[in-house]
Image (cartoon, rainbow, N blue to C red; front, top):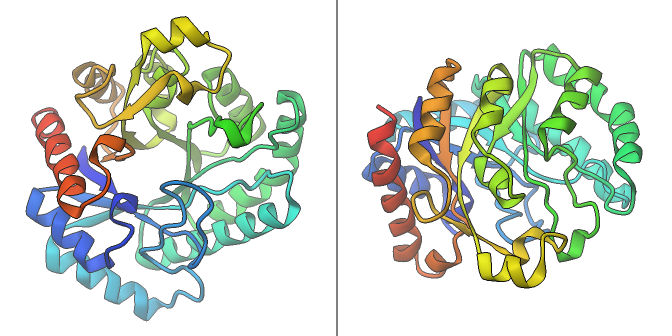
Length: 303
């Protein structure tokens, strides 16, 4: 396995500066955020460290040279929009840009990209699955034709603004089974983040054993359930009203068991720290500290 981080935490830095921090701390790789320039749809979204619009082979060569200079590879390109949004313009932009990210990853010689399935927050599960069946087979064929894997992050994106269904269909094992029945392509899998299962009061480790061959990439974010809030608000409120995103080691996920489960199923890909911990926001020093702590927690588990 390779230990990395998601570049969104350094959204105000240039890509080479991100690579420099990664190299100094000791990370092997980074997942590079690739939103269309000038967009900012939510917290931690809208970061563009690599502009995939009209991305040329020359730009790809320059990007790879920077990575070689700092001894840090790219684990994947990441772009997490809502391709099934009730807002058709938003959905159209998302679907188009996913293809551009696929094209850029192809030029970079990467094995895959990461994204969201998306969802219409005002529709039911069955309606969203029907919409998915119309939209996503063509996107996966586009990636498959370019030998590019697509990893779907399992974040529900169920926040106040996206209530009641959330902005991402791919949130539970039951739904993954149906997704993969509809699109059985070996180029279609998961960017697995255990924190999103813990946030839903689920076992974050057991699904690794069923879906191990579908895990293309992993995020390492921790989650702490606030038991007092859970007891006061119940489980039927937006999950982040009773949960707090933390860096690895400061939440409820057992990272030794999680990395052990990945090893058990033969996973040998990237594990990238995703910092969304409000205790480490603000100064560059605080954000770097979040990655240094995460590194010390995970490096002994990932040779």
